Amino acid sequence: MVVHGNYPADPRVGREVRAAMRAGFEIDVVAMREPGRPARETIEGVRIHRLPISRSRGARRLRFLGEYAAFTGFAMIHLAWLALRRRPAIVQVHNPPDFLVAAAMLPKLLGARVVLDVHDLSSDMFAMRFGDSRRARRLQKLLERVERLACRVADVVLTVHEPYREELARRGVDGDRVLVVLNSLDETQLPDALAPPGRDPFRIVYHGTVTPHYGLGVVLEAFASLPAHLSTARLEIVGAGDAVPELSARAEALGISDRVELTGVALPLTDVLTRIAGATVGVVPNLPSRLNRFALSTKLFEYVVLGIPVVVSDLPTLRRYFSEREVGFFHAGDPEALAKALAGVADDYDAALARAAAARDRYRASYDWEGQAGRYVGMLELLAAGGAWTASAAPIGGSDG
Image (cartoon, rainbow, N blue to C red; front, top):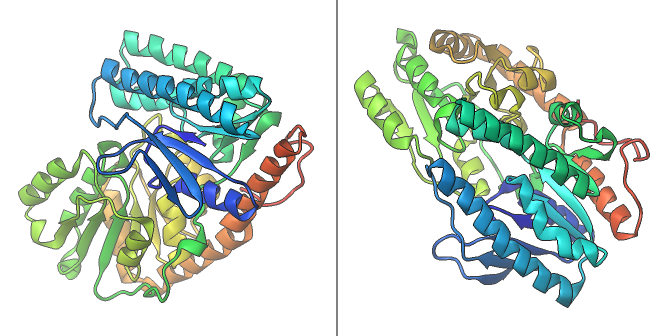
C-alpha cells in the first residue's frame, strides 16, 4: 500500500490493512514520515516504510503540488526497490494525488496488479482549497484528466460510496471496474464497556478534522443561540486542524468559551470513541460546497454504531444513505436551523433515541464493516490469483445503499 499520509493514522488504510492481514496477506505500507516516527517500523506484522516527506498544512498551491510530486518521486524509487526484492502481487495506491499511481508502474511491469483507492475527487479537493479562479479551473480540468488516466492504469478502482462511483463513471471511468467499499467502522477497534448516550448532561459532540469547510463555525453560532433551558449544555470539539485558533476566538467573542471545549489534539480512534461515548447528540455540520456534496462522513457511521442520535446537514450523499426516520437533518450552513434541530433533540429525547436505533439497524443491515471487508478481500484474493475483477461478475454482498 502507498499513501500520501501518516500510517497508522489514516482510518481507511488501517481498516483495509487489518482486513487483508486477517485474510493472510503480507503487507508493506509506504507512507509519509511524521516527526518523531522511525523511517522503518513493524506494527502488528505490517512493515512500514516512511519516506522523508512530511505534510505541510496550509501550504500555498505550488508548495502543495510540490509536496505531492516529491512524495510520488520518492515512492517510485522505494516501490521499485521493494518490487525487485519481493515481487508484490498487488500494489494499492491511495489518492490523493491520483498521479501517485505512477509509483506502481515498475511493479505493474513486473506483474503486480494495481488498485487505486479514490478517497476523494482530487479536482473537488483542489477547488475547495484554492478557489474557482480561471487558473484554478484550468488546473481542475487537468486533474480530471490525470484522474481518468490513473483509473485506466489501475486494474480495479476502489471508492468510498456509490455517488463517487457514479461521478467517476460520468467523468469517463469504466464503472464496471469500480468497487465501492464504504468507510464503515471496524468494530473490532471499539473499546470495551462504552457508556450509552444520555440526555443529562446535554453533551453535543463533533470529532474529526477541525477545518473551515466542515462547518464548525455554524455549530458555534447555533450553540450560542440555543434556548434558555439548554443554558447548561456543553459542546465538545474533539480533534486538530487549522481552524482551531479561529474557532477558539469565535467562542470567546460569542461568550460561550466556558461551555465549549476545543481539544486541538488528534487522538487515536479508540481514544476518540471512548471520549465521545455517552454523548447526547453528534453533529455532522458539513457546509454546502462542491466537495461536500459527495461527503459521507465516517463520523456519522461512528455515532450510529455508538447509538448516539445525530443531527446532519441535508446534503445529497448524506440523505442517500440515511433517512429522516434515522437521523435529524437541518439546512446546511444555517445556524438557526441547526439550533432548532438540537433543541428538538433535547425536547423529545425518546424520539431521538428511536431514530438512533433505526439508524443502527440500517447500518447493521447494509453498511457494516464486515460486509464491506468481505467485498474488499474477495477482490484482493481474485487479483492475487491472477483473475480479473469486474463489478458485473462480482458476487453480491455488503450492500451500500
